[in-house]
Length: 274
Image 1: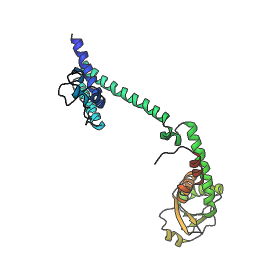
Image 2 (image 1 turned 180 degrees about the horizontal axis):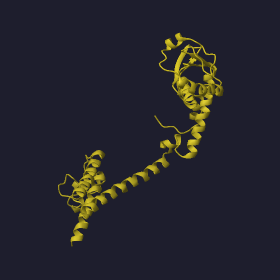
Image 3 (image 1 turned 180 degrees about the vertical axis):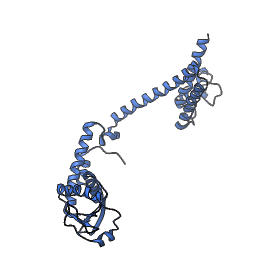
Image 4 (image 1 turned 60 degrees about the vertical axis):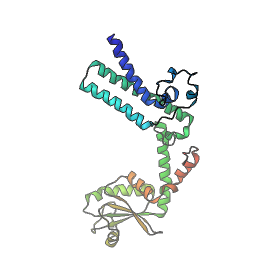
C-alpha cells in the first residue's frame, strides 16, 4: 500500500509538469474552466448540449508563464532533494529532469525535421561547420584575398615608419619586405631617427609626414593612395603577413565590392527572406 501511494504521488508530479507544458491543449480538449464542474467528460452531453456548444475561452497562460511554472516546480524539487536528500525526493527530481530531457530531445528532433522541410532556414548551408564545407570557404576566402589584393596593389603603396634603435622594427622589417615581394606592393620606408635597417638601407627621412599623420608608435604601416590622396593606418607593432593581408583588404576593399564574394553570393541560390 505504501508503495502504491508513493508511485501515485510520483505520477501526480509528472502529470502536473505535463499540464504546465501543454496547458493550451488540455484546456481546449478536456477542461472547461468556466463551467465550475471540473472535467468535461463528467458532464452529460445531452443535458448540457447548449453549454457544450459554446467553445471554451482561449487560455491566458502564455509560453513564458508556462515555462516559469515548470522551472519553479523543478527548482522546488531540487531544493527539497538537497535539503532532505531521501530516496523519494531525489527520485522525484530525477523524474522531472528526465521529463525535461524528453522535451529537449523532441525539440531537437522537430528542429531537424523543420530544416529538412525548409532548408532555406539552415544557416550551416551558407556557413558550414563540417570539414569539407570549411575547406571550401577557406579556399573561397583565399581566392577573394588574391583578387582584392590585385586591385589594391594597382593603386596603393605602403608607408613604413621605423627607428633604427627599435628592435621590433628590425624584427618586423623582413616580414614586411617579404609581404611586399609576394604581393607586388611598393613600400616606402621612412626613418624617424635618421638610421637605417638592413632590409631598408635607403629610407626616406621625412619627419613632417610622421608628424602630419601623428604616428604613435613604430613600427607603423600605412596604406597610401596617390590618386586619391588618402592614407589609412594598417598595422602597428610586430604583425604577421596574414594580418597585413587581412587589414589591407578590410580597410581598402568594402565587403560589398569584393568581387569573389559577389560571385559566391550570385551563385548561391539559397536566400534568407528579409
